[in-house]
Image (cartoon, rainbow, N blue to C red; front, side):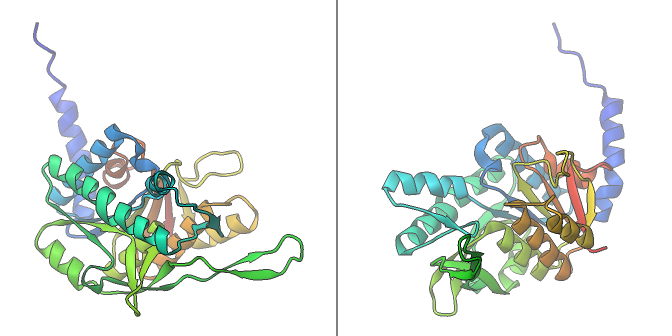
Length: 298
């Protein structure tokens, strides 16, 4: 017995509804940060790769920046290397930074390139060190000692923050109609390798490239209110108010700080969304209702 044919009229209507969104983003750069937790499911990873290929074939210029915290943690455990977090970031000593580079710029980067290639795309794997794309400086963080209430400097080792982005390599890659997949590993002025937070790295890339959108794919639906409901849209002032009143807390704070930084660098809007939702990228960019929390300057 033959399978019933899909409703072609419904399919045509979906394409028509997507057309204005495709035209809005035609030839525009969109930076997508693909989080370590969002990469855990194979089916979701394949959906993500399909989305990226469709974006490129629809006239957009996608740039993928990936994380890999869970995968780094598993490799460190396997090698018997102790790891700790301070101020929300992994302390990265000399042994750890070698593992970070191996996992991020090696296995994870090439796995994502492979997924995109399997869906018919042409991706190229790079990291911030390639062509001096991203120059980093040592990250500096402070924490408040709970006993003395005094701020203390935290030494995070080889954890860096983007200092300068040279877009020439990315311009050449995009001109060649390739999809860049970037690992957040950068080089310092002294030639030292630095582990850079993937959200921060993506924000710096988006700002330097004048991206139309920065999408931060993570493992939550977006920014939630105190009743745990999704907030569909925020301004920078809203974000600062929600941090001050305790609505935005913990790991969401550095994500919001990245959003604000990217907006200040000229990115039109930033979206935080759940990367485990099937075709989350397409839902956000090519439908009216979106898929997460949209953040604008004001």
